[in-house]
Length: 130
Image (tube, rainbow, N blue to C red):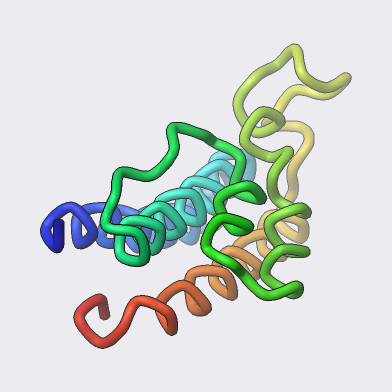
């Protein structure tokens, strides 16, 4: 199971890097998407570590955070970013297209929140997952 956890964890961290790179390139909607994906994968890694079982097949990061008993501030952050899974991807979810919906400021805020969640998850994972 340790290999599976490591794979989820490494991909979560790579998604954070990709989110940062997307801000640099001006692809703010993609940054937000990868921020949300990093959270999802990081929380799934933590779920596997805690329960020695496959994570639920869900994209609801707030549900995943609840399942791993995240504290209130982490739960709040996941609520803030939950809707971005759909908003950052699909042109028919909002009155605005994803690439028009996000800008440098709001994508940076979401990346900071994603980093906070990943940092918390890392604190729960232990030293093996740096």
